[in-house]
Amino acid sequence: MKYFVRVISSCLMGFCLAPAAAYAQEWKPTAAVEFIVPSGPGGAADQYARAMGAAFQKMDLLGGQAWVPQNRSSGTGVIALQALQQKPGNPHSMTLLHTGINVSNLTGELKLTPADFTPTTVFLRETMALTVKADSKFGNAREFVEQVKRDPGSVRIGYLGHHVLLSLAKPLKAAGVDIKKLTLVPYKSTAEALTALLGGFVDAVPGSTPNLLGMITGGRVRALAVSSDERLGGAFASVPTWREQGVDSSFSSVYGILLPKGVSQDAVHYWETAFQKLSANPDWIALLERNGAHPVYWNQRQTIEYLAKERQDLAPLVKDLGLGAN
Image (cartoon, rainbow, N blue to C red; front, side, top):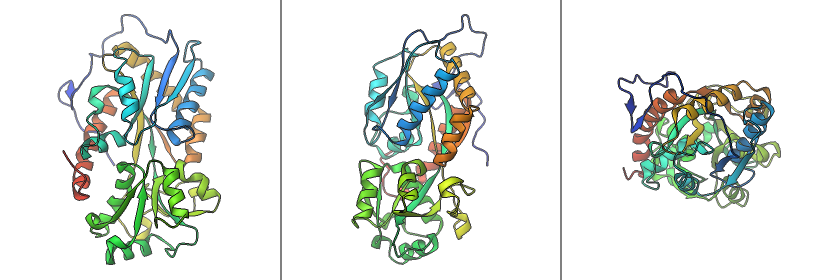
């Protein structure tokens, strides 16, 4: 599958790239590096922020400077984005670039877009899974689809974030479900949604694989399907994809890095190189594989191209769900 589109000019979707000329002076960190985590401690984003800092220290990519994760949790990530907005031109501060930013902007919940910052790189693609209680009547995704096709509102779906919801809406739409009639129950965290699932307040919860891992391995919930093109390893090895169960659909979200607006291109180049090295780090790769994520490395231009394509692809699905304000 091709993810990138050809760029004719040097500006796309509001992003402008500096010429790829020789850098007058190689930039490197000269102060502590702040990573603003758009979620609370212990979640997938927090895990990745701390793991990448440890890897950068081990590979001596911080020039002896500290790596300081700062948790700024909110449903759309707006608090983290606003914090980064207050640091224009500062290459020692960054936050997470993720699919949810595009989606939240499409729904009208978030006014900011990646173009208000400096997108720098994408470092992983994340898989989603659909989960139910261990004793749920749904034995597989086919049975789930059959139920929501008959009566879309009969199954209560708890979720965190519209990008997670889209990971379920996309295969359901492909299967012929009227997704506008789904019963949707938003929560402030995946943990809260899973607690509601165990308590019987909702019937199913889609979520990112790292945020579901503990409940899966503990045997309290079961995964009916994963959104990836191929099966995952580890705790999700026995979980079939949607396509294996007769639904021609897949979905993934991405994680990357946003620097503040106005950061110099030599600093962008430094962080591109650092994340390229991270993508080959064995400890980092092992963490992602345990979490059901796929390590990738996309440079700034590839990242910007992908963001434009992602927004274009997701807009119709947001509209079909009745979420779109844009």
